Length: 525
Image (tube, rainbow, N blue to C red; front, side, top):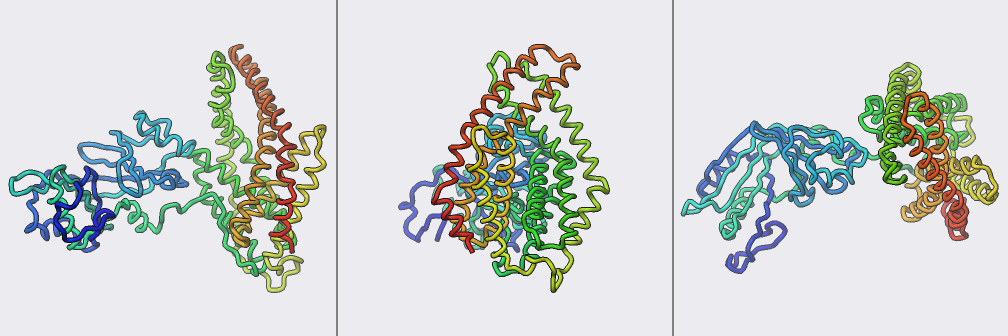
């Protein structure tokens, strides 16, 4: 017999080490109710009912499952007498932290109990804590007594309408034999040890499963698939990402919905521009224009989101005496962000957005032409991927080698955009290549791309903060705020110069014979 991961024989219980004060979790077979369970064991154990009450159990996580991915279950349990939020280990069911709460805050920083906040904040970051599902049930507490009427076990039985009951068993120290004998009886009538939370079964009833959303691409293509079919398949996957993030982008649930929305838009636009002569030219041009517009209207809100998300870092980058003087800048940015968000929401609810997106979806669902006129339409997708990836890689090397210390910032910005195109292409087609090899090259590209992104972002931030300073002049902002902003701008300018100076070293690390050989070996026709 195996109990809680340990094998036991019928030898004397004296040979078994004492049980610790952990809880053991079991799942009932589907046919067994709590009352039937107690009835079946009535001749084996002396049960003493303690209490029974109606309960609501709600499960929470971020939209992209950050807690679950880190092995944490967030459960909010409400009854007539109490409401408590608990964080449990997904794999063992053991308690990590708990707190009495009347309601669940939206963001980790809003939690007053420090033990909860300290666990959630590093994982959730800027993401909202959202309800996944709620279970209605009955929670019954029962003690198991021995012949001396002393409690040897404590049972908590959760009964739900559509999913199997759960049992939590807590042994009492000093009564190990009684506990092990009772566990034998549990297993005999069909209970199975399980630490999986009811959340898993509850999601199944909704046709869902954990981790059913990720912003990462995982597109499965056949290398011999004709290119026009494969490209539509890629765009369909990106359209799903746009649509699934659309309503929460409008509602501004959290800043990452807009971020993921924009990434899917940028990937779509890059695909239309890079995978040429595959889809009909008229549709490619029309929808390229639409997605370019979509990128433009979402940029102001996203830029302001980033400033707000980075604001703590801004404050830490200036001397302590100046930090509180930056607070009016935060208020100014927040006001602009709300205006930009309102404007964006209006545009995403307008026919200018809705009609072209419907047309795009209809186009992607339309059957492909048997004999297309586009030169690359019938090309095997692996061949097209090889050609495009290698061509863009060569362009990066060529453009990067031309950049000197005297090159204008615009050349680094153009190179960054080309790097983004290459990365999107490699992500589109990564399943066509050996996993370790393609991931290694994407990682090398990302290391180089990061310095270009840092340089560009810092340059834009410096220009924008100067513009904000001019706009704030007429709003009666204290002079100390402008002093603090001046120091902040100087700090950003210094970091921008450092990023510019680091470019050559990062590019040289990317422009290595082994990396060039790896690209030509993997993507060379």
